[in-house]
Image (cartoon, rainbow, N blue to C red; front, top):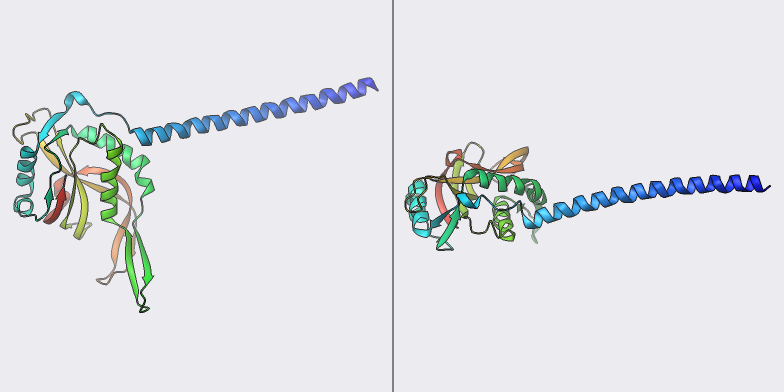
Length: 241
């Protein structure tokens, strides 16, 4: 009887130990997931790290004005609303800006996409389409994220509203732009500076009806610095840096 009882106890103890081992393994897996989640949260909040400070240069308001004049001409000098918020900025190489936009596209952009249009009924029962999330929301959101990262706020994050013409978009548009420099930039002239569009890169697309006819819109897949030749800026209505 004692041997039978002892055998049963040993069997139950073995099963209990197996269960404990399984639970410990599951707890360890959850701990790993929690650590991974905390790492992601830390990366989102603190950013991907400082740019290459040894390659940074000072961009003065005067040189900024000169560069924008050279790039846009009368579209810039005749713009009714130009807001250059600071006297000086830091400016760096394009690859540092691309690195930050890769980070933004991976960790922040998924919180915003895709474009969203909702249909609403007026009090008189007519229908109206509301662009709940479109180009101005995307450009505002990108403007806001670098403010959390002190090593990125001194950079020339620009925003523009205007009339554009291109292969994939024409008409009124809100978008971002950025100035970068190479090692030849001497902080006195515009030589070595370059101005880039920051435009969403297309993912999945679909068509939506508008009063002017069907409009093709696309899910935003990532952000990239793009050459100014990607589309023509016909008019500038508003600009801030």
